[in-house]
Image 1 (spheres, rainbow, N blue to C red):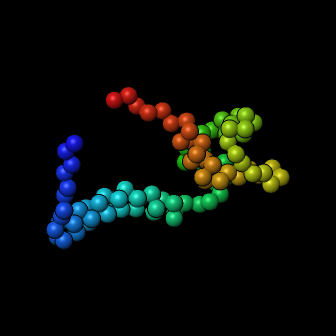
Image 2: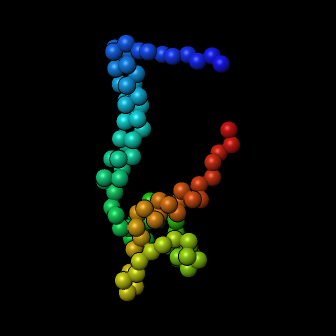
Length: 96
């Protein structure tokens, strides 16, 4: 059994830590900004603009209980997180 131990100097440790934090922040900051700027509740028109899903397709998915929604009289509302989850669940990865 060959076990290698790496003991970095203070400078090497700071460089490794700095690179790791920079990589994490570069990935997370755009997500955090999008989440901070988004609306919590969307109308069907906003869902159509965001996803391209027609009103009829939204109704189909509501009727099929695929797309959670709230209703106030005749007005329909969607939570942004529900729409994002709906889209993520239907994501098809490209072959590569």
